[in-house]
Length: 367
Image 1: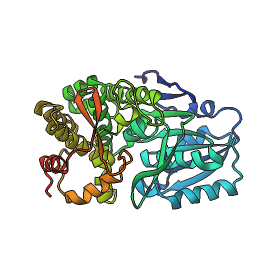
Image 2: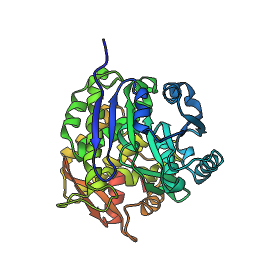
Image 3: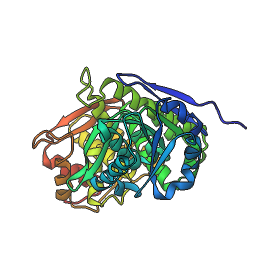
Image 4: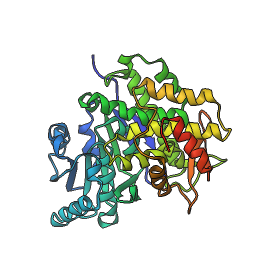
C-alpha cells in the first residue's frame, strides 16, 4: 500500500516557509534550497551516515561539505560551533550557500545556530530524524547551544528555509527515543489542543508505532500547535489577551532544563519535560488554578505513552539554582508557564519557595 500524500504545513510571517510531513521526502531538498545555492554543508551526527544517504543522494548537484558532529547534547557547545565556522571559512562559504541538518533536536539546534551566525545568516533546511526534532526543535527558528550555566542560554532566532519531516526515519528510532519525543507532543495537548490528549488517552500500543496513522496525526497536530504560537510571537516577546505567546511552548521546561543540567544531559529531553509538566501542574494546583483531577490527567497522559512522571534524584536546592538561570526568569523572580485549564496557559510569577518545594515533593522529590 502506498503512503499517503505529504502534508504541507505553512509557516507565515516575515520569513515564510513550509513544514512537509510525509514519507521519502529527500528529493524535495533542491526545490527548498533554491536555484542560487552552490555549496551545501551537511551537519549530522557521525553515526548517521546511512540515515543521511538519501539526503546526500538528493544533493548530488551541489558541492558538499560534510561536517560530522558529536551525538546528542554534546554537540551543543561553543567549541563544536567554532569548528563548524572554521570549516565553512576554509570552504569559502558565502551568503548564497546553505546548511542542511540531518539529525535530532540537538543537531537542529547547533546547525541552526551555525547557520544563523555564519555571515550573520545563511539558508538552512532541517531534516529531523527524531520525533522530538520534528515536533519541537526543527520548527520555529529557535537555535542555540549550552554553556556551563545552563541549557540554550546562547542562541539566535533564525527561521529555516524549510523543514522535511520524513516519517520513514522514525522507523529507525529506538523505542525509548520515540517515547521521549512524545513528551513534547503531550505537552502540546495540554497547552493548546485537547484532541491530542484524547488521541493519546484512547491509543493502543500499535497506535503509537512509527507507521501508525494515529502517530502521524499526533505529529501534525503538535507541529500545528507550534506554528500557530510561533507565527504570533516569533521572538517570545509576549502574546495577546493574557496568553503568554511563544513562552507557552516552555510548559514544563523550567524544571526540565534544570533536571537535564543536573543529570549532565543523560536524561532525555522529553522525559525531563514530562516530569516538569507534572511538577507545574502540582504548582498550579497549590496556587488554586487547577484541580487535582487535571493534575491526575497529566500523570495519566504522560504515563500512558511510557514517560516518567516522578523524580527524586537531585536535591531541590540544586534544582532551584538551575531554575533561577532559566530564560523566563526576570531578575531574581522565577516565572512558570502553568495552566488554568486545558488549552489555557498563563504565567505564574514569583511562587513561594514553600510551594515549589511542596510541588517537588508531590512528584517524589525530597528537600
